[in-house]
Image (tube, rainbow, N blue to C red):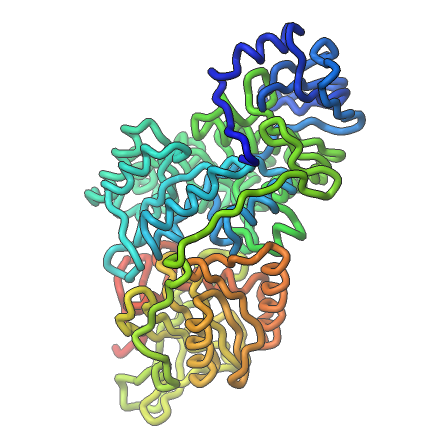
Length: 598
């Protein structure tokens, strides 16, 4: 990290003791701030924090720790807060490399993340996980990994680029910095005794690590069976009632506020209305895109939203710091400001705004007065990482024509109804016209053609279906960010533009694209696994802004439509999705026909 290795407590404890007693002097002292004490829930005025060897040596009046070579920061009028910890997020969703993400996150006060790199794992397996994990280990941001659990997310409904087995998870648990198992999305497999799921959880528990969960269903017996398996958290909670039930059963409730999935308003009512204890409540982002990072922030945005909903600021900060550290059994090192802890500290003018003016990571000022103050190492992804889109052949317009099994002029089809700012979809139907044997989209009724094309092995598999809710009036869009198997997802109002979008996206190595009348309106190239850009944050932000504007040009009014689009292929969240194998009923975990013939 920034040219120096982070030191464990046992290497520096003697030095810290000497500084605490004044025998040795501190490297850095923060003076005269108001301490946010997440251990007691207090705000303590006129406090100092003395730092040595990257850790905290003394909290209180630290005058006796200041020497000739001690750097002193005056925090008068500011709050001294622990750095924020994101307990569940996917770096790939930011469209940035871990390094570029770290620059943005640190500037917003996030000093540690627990990333689940299951997006890249679905493309490159263990190799991909290792690339991102290794990149994270050299950064001033603390990057902990929860090893991906469900690759692919389902075994019989889709085809990913790789598969992870129990042996991969067991090996991953031995890596330094792997602190748990990534969200266990295959909750039916867990509940009904799937050997792979049981083996992964057992390997994690045997290693003394944390099993993070994913439970969007409403079935209470299934929920209790899931918790009994060892899965101890959930970030898929969208109502107060679901949150209260999970908390009462001892689960850790991860309250999510990302770019598209905005759950704080409803779920945090367990605190503001039911007044439950907050020890087992964590704040997370899950999926955040570049604009949100720049315009609203990272975990500080989630803390701010929690405060806006009526939660006490200190309590909100606890949910974004010490609660997360305790959940992952790392509170001996991170999560609070106390002797012996890593010196990850924010100086904040206004707790309600949650915008840090100074960020300190491991005792080093990494951000101050609007600027990053440290150099970041360069991580080179191998050439293989930048060659991940493999189509059997170029796509043609006729590939996007869905033939009716009926001889009638009208037919009924199953439709994926998307819901703005939600990861869920609704299973509905629509009556569509049939012309020359081809089922026609209904632009007036907002029923648009959808396609999912296998892009890892070049099998040529293409499935077709229909979506409603995006309100496209013309053109086409495509994305290789298509959770979780990340095949090539295409949607459009006409087959010609759909073919152009698919082929152009394949040429650029993946990413996202918008096409109108055969011309590319906007694109975000994502060379790394078709998931992450190799460009700086500022470039990606500009490209995404242009992409968002292009979606609007096609008629889409949704917030972050490309994020909602990217989940249309995720067959583990109800109710209905598309995969490269066909249309998936997620309530039954089976493939279903697009056309209803009965």
